[in-house]
Image 1 (spheres, protein in one colour):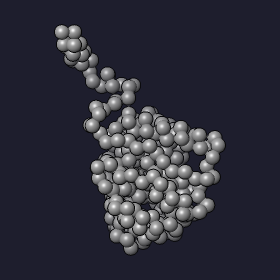
Image 2 (cartoon, rainbow, N blue to C red):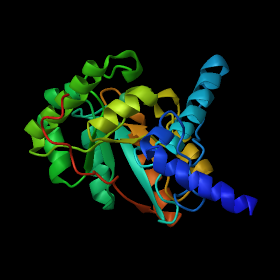
Image 3 (cartoon, rainbow, N blue to C red):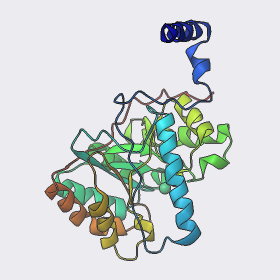
Image 4 (tube, protein in one colour):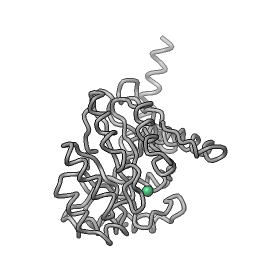
Length: 276
Ligand SMILES: [Zn+2]
């Protein structure tokens, strides 16, 4: 009797208050089973210790909360039901590391995703064209590699718009996905990026390749933490040679462990005039 009244009252309330208002300001927690599990973000480096490590762990927890709150916009990992992992390379293109990574991927017949910055696309458009023509997925990574949490809304939109314009000039195609530099992200940035039509891909394994003195530590992070659906963060920009160096062993390990390597889905790109 009482239960019936409560559900009647809830139903009445949901008619009176628009769903958008109920949701505003609250994390939208989906029903159990509706969405796949959001993984913990893993990966260590001997040189990342003390306060830096504490900050990194805090960021990782916050990233999971955001992925939970913005289920269809922010992704830490992909569906564990698919027996696949997703190699991703940030900060390119350049003419050494990105080119080497592409040629190794090609040699092994696997695909991956590159998050290219606008400034590097401008310097090396031919490498971007090569990546596009080879069928690799390409996402945006801003132009100046600034923290979006420190930019105004107009600056964020102009960073992403220009990044996509440069990509389109180089390849003829725009991208519908992005990764924020340093993973710097909050509710405000997500809303701005979502309004521009882009989807946001973070990562669930951080190889911390930039912090490793020994490239085998990159492989060790993957061996220690790999789960189906993992998005694996590496770099292939100027001066970032360590992941390229260890990539053949990484691919062989993942393949022998029985996982497929896939590119992230480059969702429908926003129209070319999405400035507000
Ligand atoms: Zn970056």
